[in-house]
Length: 77
Image (cartoon, rainbow, N blue to C red; front, side, top):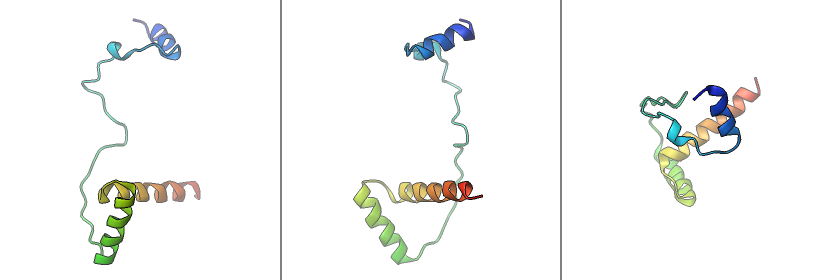
């Protein structure tokens, strides 16, 4: 299939998933790297409370909050 035809089907909301080979697909800028961070106990407890309220893990809330802060910082530059 030519790219033009593929794009047309995509633009027309045709299900194109059967046409894709996602075996080698990568999420851009999503490579993971493990880091260790030490937090005071009060901060861990506060993070756990907030994570519990939202129904997510401590790690998830840390990632989201850091991403929000970094995005905000990038917009202010």
